[in-house]
Image (cartoon, rainbow, N blue to C red):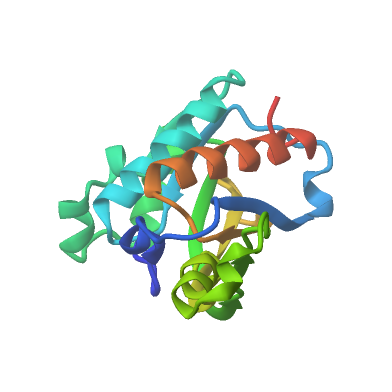
Length: 211
């Protein structure tokens, strides 16, 4: 399953800055899914990067399995070499999914990235005056006043990644649930993936899509 944009955040795994923040910013649920729960789900990260695909799918699989769901990673059914040969079509994938009696397909894709430039102000520290003898000479004044220092500000770039998670019914192929997530300066693939999988499956559970 080849994504047009891929999960490029794996290439920025060591972005410096603020602590990682990943959150779901919006969800949609089809009226057809009001009483639907799934027991067998295949998870698919739509990226050409095998490491990112394996990591994200594995963490989603773990979260689903902890809730009693049988979850299968797409990379186990369709390894990278098979995907690159060009013979793995959407029909072939659906045939395999249905043949393995999966109820649904959970996909993850990066839909947009933004770079925000902001100014980080400096700080000024001051050593309080405790005596006045240093006023008498330039050397004394300079030596004493030197601890008053300006820490200059600087500009930095923040990376924001917007991801979309979709849940499709395997039988009808219809979209039943969708969520948009935002990840701000992800500190690394592992930490991002763990948090993303946790909040995504928690939300699916809150929306009565899994047990």
